[in-house]
Structures are given as C-alpha cells and as structure tokens.
Length: 195
Image (cartoon, rainbow, N blue to C red):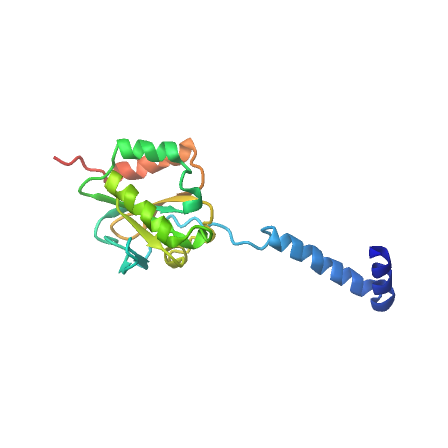
C-alpha cells in the first residue's frame, strides 16, 4: 500500500520534487528532536540589568539587591531541582552569606509546564520556612531572556553577580569538581568574615 502511494506520487511529481519532499521530511524530524533548539550561552563577564520577577504570592518586583551587593542566584528548573543536591546540601551546611554576599533562588516556572505554579509556590514556601532561604519566581523567562542565557530547560544554574552587575560565575547542569573550584575562587574574592 505504502509502495503504491509512493509510486503514484513519484509518477505525478517527478524525482526532483520527491527529493525535496523527503529532505523536508528528514529536516522536520531532526528539528523535532532538538536539531533547531537554542543552546545555553555562557554569560560570564556580561554586565546585566534588573528584570521583573515574582514573589511567592505572585506579586511583581525587580530583581532584589542587584547592584547593591554581590549576589549568588540559584536559577532552578523545578523538574530538575535535585540536580547538584550534594553541592547544595554542602552550601546549606557551610553558608557563604556575609555582609558582602547575599543569595536567593529564582524558580524557572516556564520550563515546568506540567507542574501547576500554585503547587510549586506552596512547596517553595514550605522549603523557605524550613531553610530560611528566600526564593522568587520567573514565570515567563524574564531572567533567562533579560540576561541572554539561552536554553536553560532541565538545568540547575548557579550565577554569581558582583556589585557592579557583572556576572563572574555562570554554570549549569551537573557541576564538575572544576566548576566547584571555580565557584569558590570567585566567592573568596568577596567573602568577608562577619563579626
């Protein structure tokens, strides 16, 4: 049946048109498999501006403390919140927060379409109460697009932005030992032991 349909199409269209149709079909199959997907951009060294995000009650606000202090921002896809868990647990036990470094998380809601935003916010509020951490939300790629990160779906991202709004550290996905060493080199430049 398929062969006779192909034969009829060949007789009707000719060989050149069949090649064009097949090439289009092959490209569309690859595009659906990530062929045309955007890549993640390394934004280290880039000067960034504030963008609008949301608090845990969905109220809009500009990215807090940007330009006022050095910031460590965790940009997390809720589908992959457990990525780098060992490193995150270590940071919870050995805080780098001080008078010159502040930190908070931003949940990338847009890349978790199967998880209702209200449920994610509820889970995050509970986590914030237990850890004391501050967590905000990016419902529409404001932070991703505003800073030119590219495709960050399914990635845990750690960003260190200095007081001059320059990104000094940007890593995503599963961290290597080198990533962690590079992270602490940047932190050591700004960390002050508070009395």
